[in-house]
Image (tube, rainbow, N blue to C red; front, side, top):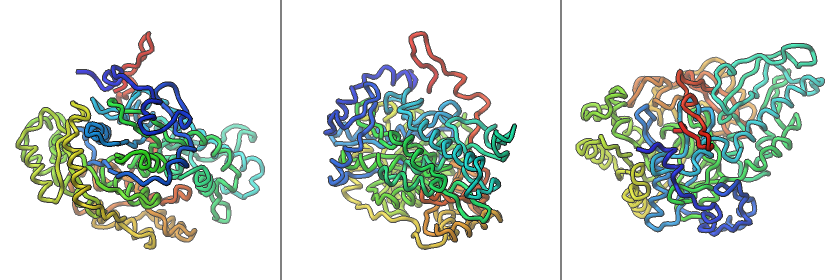
Length: 556
C-alpha cells in the first residue's frame, strides 16, 4: 500500500493556471509560485465581491484520538465528491505548521486519495506565509526591546511585557528564557518567552483581517506591554505597525492549489483550535464563496473547540452564515472513547462502541445549539463491521441527524458521493437558522461559563486569582464585548485530557487570561495547555530524508 506522500508524488498535477481558469480567474489575477502554487491578487476580490455567496459547509469532528478521525481527508474528499456530481465546489483549508509536521501531529493535506497537492510543499515552507508571520512577530519584539534600551520614553515596565517571541517549530526549551544577558549594550535583562508561530496573535490577526487596512488597524491595537502606571502599550505606540504590515503584505493573500482530482483549494492561515481560533482565513473563505457554489471548510480538532470558535469568533466577526455541518467520526475512535486500548480498536466490540458513542452524542447536541443542520459521516475502515456501522447510523437518526459512510481515503471523490448527496439533501430540506452561542453584551466571565456549561458539559468554572484580576482589567479597558477564545486540551470535553467520552461532574479551571486586542478576542487558558509544544521521544523528523534525486521520503 502506498503512503500518503507516495500517492501525492505519483499524482498528475494540472498547472495552477488551468485550475484557476476553471474558476474564471485569469492569469493576471495570479501571483505564481512555480507551476502548481499561486496567490490570489488583491484585485480579484474587487472583481467578485458583489457576486452572491455560495453555500458554506463546515467539516468538524469528535474529539481527536490516537485511533484517528480523518477530518481534513473528509474535507478534501467531500470537495472532490461535489466535483464528481458536476457541482462547482472549492475547499478552504488551513496551512500546516512545521513544528508539528516534524513532531507528532502530521500534516494538513488530507490522506490517501483525498489530498491537496503539492503535499510536500504545503507541509513544509509552502509560500512562506508562516515565515512572514514569524518575522513580523519578532520584529515587534525587537522594536519593543529597542525602545526600552534607547531611553524608554513610553515608560514601559519590563516586568509587564506581554509580547512573546515565536518560532514555527516545537521547542520546549524556549518556553521560558532570559534575554539581555551580557553588557549594558546588550539590552535590559528580563524574562521572556516563545510561543509556536500558530499561537501568535499575528497569526490570528492575519486570519481575521479583511484587507490591508483592517490588517494594519488590528496590528496597531495589539497590546504588547503595560507602562509603570499600568496602562496598555500597543504596537502602534512603538511605531511597529507599518513595518509589520510590510512583512505581511504577500502573506495576506490566499494561496491557490488543487486536490488529487483537481478541485481548487484555497489554503491560507493556520491557527490551532486548542490554543487559538482554529480556522482558515476570512479572506480565503469569503473569496471561495464568491468563486464557487459550494465551499467546504474545516475547523481544528473536535467540534468543542474548532466548530465553537468557527461559529462564535470567525462567523460572528466576518458575518458568515454556514449552511451545513459535517461531523466526522470513526468506529475506532468511538471504541477508544469507550475505554479500549489503541491496539485493540480494530477488534469488534459493541460494548465499547455503545460506551464511547456518548462523545459523538454530545457533539451532535452542541452543533444543534447553533441552528445549523448536521450530517454525521463515518470515515470507513476495512475493520468496521456491519453491526457497528448500523448501530451508529441508527443512533444518529434518532438524534435528527443524517448519516453517510465516507470512503474518500480509499476511493477519492467517488467514495464521498453518498456524503455529498446527503449534504445537498439537508441544505435543501433544512434551512440553516444559524445563531451564535452567546451575545456580545454579556460579561467575559459569563461568556466563559456559557461555553463551559453548554459546550463542555461542565458544572462550573474556577479562576486563578490572576485570571480574575486580568478579566476585570480587560473589561475596564473596554473589551467586555469581545468573544472568548478558549485554550483547552483537544482530547477531552474537560480540561483533563484523560477524561474521555462524555465526562460529567467536573469544573473548567481558568489559570490565565489575556486580551488579543488586535485579533478582537480574549483568550482563556485552561488546565496545563501549552502554547509552545515539545517534541515526542521519537519525532517524525527522525524518519525524513531526501534522496539523491531530491525526492522527499518519510513525510507521512
